[in-house]
Length: 168
Image 1 (cartoon, helix red, strand yellow):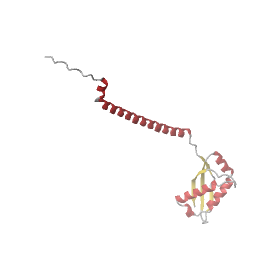
Image 2 (image 1 turned 135 degrees about the horizontal axis):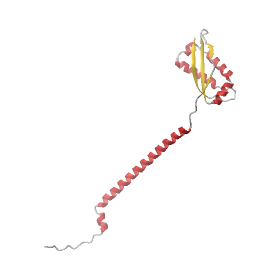
Image 3 (image 1 turned 60 degrees about the vertical axis):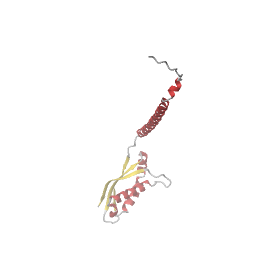
């Protein structure tokens, strides 16, 4: 038989929606917001990193590396301090630019005089090892960099290279 219908209790639709699913929807909302923050932060960091790297590469591309400028000096032949041995050496200077090369060429007699005095003051034993040759290169570099005029600037010489080195 048919049951009598129970009296319906009026329920507002807002209360029904808030009852159980309200906690789940807030959790979902916080998870979605958290994921968006992480993704946007990671994307921003990645964009900064890659644009920074590209900027460094662009600077390197913009500044073409200068070709080295070399100045070969005439052969030096000097008696060493022992008196029985001599040194024959060919030296090439690496200079900053063509202007430095021209300045050194202009004052070549002074450069040769300085280097002849330096080289002839050495003993054969002082020039045998590779370390001693590096020290000699530094001494030559210091002599070449000395200003030619009392109030002048020093020369911009980057390196001293030995192209021939004979002790006999």
